[in-house]
Image (cartoon, rainbow, N blue to C red; front, side, top):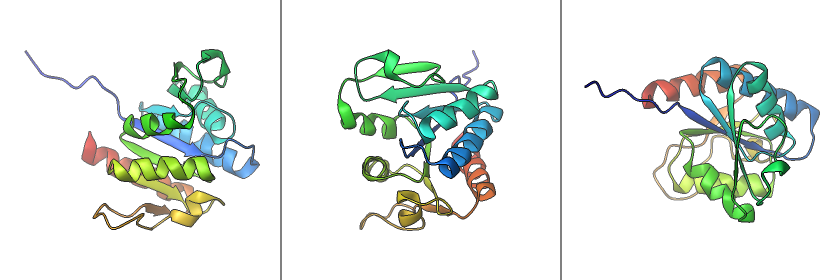
Length: 173
């Protein structure tokens, strides 16, 4: 009997829940790219870049998984294919980090920074959009602490995001 991998490559997109037009456009394009690759998009299931990325994936026949902080599955955005209601508040950020193969950071604030920290501790590849204002710009190309992890990847434009996602996927799949 052949042992074939069934699980799809899983990409976590994190960033602003606030509505910043440019960040949302970038997130939409990343979500669309993930769907076209037949990968799974994971987000926190809220508004802002999470909603925009999910819309990009759904518009391109993709699968979206929203891991939300509260207990009501109806509170996720309307582009969530699968909703996992954790009921654990921001502690769900650790679940998000552990559920992905790689993460892409688009903008973001304190909540996003906590997710980056969890991703770093789990030694997950992180791609940060330095061309978008917020946490992604501040931490692109940096190490979080003394661990010998690879630095957070600095993507200077959308093409570098796509290139790095494909490069990492080829190594991990």
